[in-house]
Image (cartoon, rainbow, N blue to C red):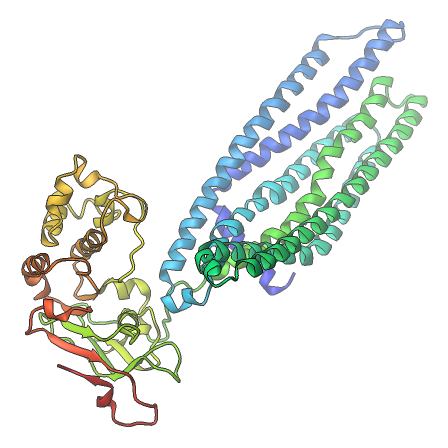
Length: 570
């Protein structure tokens, strides 16, 4: 197996290791199911044969109670074990996938915005849903059947060695090894097809997400039909890959059944030979081939298990890429001095997405604590991009952003956001309670009085208090129960509770009338006096005149040395 395959295996092992007790329980129950089925089939054959011989007078005595009790026990055990195995295995895998989704979301949250922008939204959605769901095949349909088959085969070998001469054990072992070789061959063939199937599935889901998300624009520009044709081609490609993958698995099933049938026939011939020579009894001669035939369910699961492994490994690689290296670079070991809040500053900062078309800069900024820096510019001049860069979510095109003497990109994401609070213009709020928005997972650190005080500072306490549920009121999907201005102020209240020394605000007062803005500013002034603040707005006239101003202008050509021509302060 190549290097990436080993990494994928280690990743899957780490994912499912946390629930390993659940999985071992599920695998043991699966093995019990199969062993009970084998015992039921073999013991039934033995009992029927023994009963017939006793009825014909060829068997002097027969204890009907013990074998009949064994048959009933095997039948009940098989049913209960199968039902319990389904419960335990699905509970285990659902818990593991929930853990993985949380870990994946944390990995995405640790990624800078520039990294996330490199992916289409449908691709990330596919990795978070389809690829993670594909991973459940590894414990349920790969490792589980292999472990349970090994345990079941071991029990069968012990029974064979106890009841019959050694060739019976050798025959069963040979059948298991031959099935294993067929399974390994299938796994080798299916590796390539599995990777292609995962890629085809991802392409189809990405295209479908893009189509649904951009349907209005596609219709407006008369491109919907062309996109539908592309989506249909990708659907056919996915279906073709899936058919090919399933056909490979289907072709191997007759091979395994042929191995089991041939082994059963050979076992029957051996059993008749041993019976003719008086080495075993007639009921045991019937039991042995039936026990071998019962291995059909056990050995038949192995090719499918190995075949599914390739698909899970391919999906694991896609998920692993999202999680791996989730934090920002740590090339620089320096950390800001915790004794004093580090000051945010920039040196010759150039922002934008393409070096040949910068949006702003070079900029030398060092906002004074207590005097917010107001950034203004026409739409499209890079105001939000400047805030993304100051927050470390966007890489500078030139120059640097520093916290004290430490480059911002040298800090892990947790260390960076322990000092910076960032309120973007576009909010994505989950459908949860207001208290969860204000202080997610930190209720002990923020009593209700602190939450109400934060709401009062953003002039939202009366609105929340008017609701019968108060802080426990839900805001609806995307905050639909609140207006746009209320959503922005709710997020600003959460920012106040974070209590960090650097605050970046993108249009925090959009949609508010002048009287409300002045009321909020008056209440926020003591909070702002202790912080560095950079605030982006289209309406600077509503803000205090003594606050510092920065108007972003169109950058001059890169060959110019007059950096001051790129920014003018008013």
